[in-house]
Image (cartoon, rainbow, N blue to C red):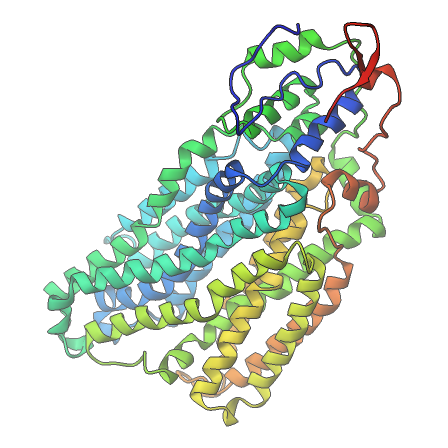
Length: 565
């Protein structure tokens, strides 16, 4: 079979289809094939993976950030007779609906990806996101149901898609990434959240500027009627609907990725297909390997053996994680994500106070009010959020995930203590500075690491399920922050924020708990997924290099030569 050539490959991307076809031992062939991924230099196909996998997080952050602006617009359009503001319960319902759907999506898609494979469902969650987003943008009230009920329905649907994207994008990126820069690659995928937040503010700002002449005439909320309301109705639909655009662009690429070779080897147990898929991906082509490429390896294979990996089952899952040594890792990743998101989403409770401090809230003119809300949010995300994401990308593979997470929780504990205990003594600009620092160390710390670590530290057969459980725990924390802790800020002063300082103190306690829970989380920097599986879960999927003819070949003179890797 030495004369057979397969398609794909060029000067930049070598075609490796037949490189290990002469190896008879399947465990050795698997090890050599995965070395190709682990040792591959950072290249354009990694950039492509970052963009395609990051689109879901762009949309996720776009929605979460844009809804804070959109609820202001909804107040002018649908609650004109109630002070042009959403009732507190309606505001909470619209925001929590997405988190509720996200929990379902994270658990369901996380489990499903370990059963049927990553490729077969990657893209379905993006279709759900697109449908849910467009459903919101086209929603309207009726005699039977009001706009809040309809929006909540579509936001639950969209949340299911967003939830599915968390485990899928994380593990697909992890299983295809080069070991040396795996943290940076996964962090860059997650950092798309920053661009999503930025895009939400920019799109809302552009929509507001487009209807400036109509909105400017309404000096008070009471004066916003007819043309003014029609303009704002268009604005919020444009703002929400734009979130589906990048998702539509990325859909083709998600539907045509190959199956991750680690799933193919370790779960599906299709050795030749996994080896061929590696070459298809590394060569920069789309989709799975062709039948001809798989056939080349299958026909060239000599004396196939049994691939030595454990099989997945619910009994094995519970038996494995019920042991403290392994279960403590899941407690660490899930617990730290839950504790983090309580403060991460709760910090948004401070937005109105921060915006007022810098003069971007409370204006009576409709145009000025909406414009300032957009610009104010733009300032906040650019000041701390986006830099934090990219500082994390730059340091995940040098400082390490565990160090960043533990250090981040400790710094956040201190910052929240300062805000809480000195709240009434800090000036508005001082509060802004502390807010920016919180955003910086949230993203340059546990907000990024809680996403990255679960995608690395579990066996392949349960990697997606465990990541889904961890991510769902985080969203449960978000729901707790929005439903249980948010109402505390108005305790004793309805309509005010007189208890906000105590809420910040509560967040400091959660950050301290996150600090201690993070000691259960392992360090995963610059270590192959297989070595981590052996070190953390006592499962040796890294067979030793065999000094036999199975890893050798003979030249034309009959002399043995070791195959180059």
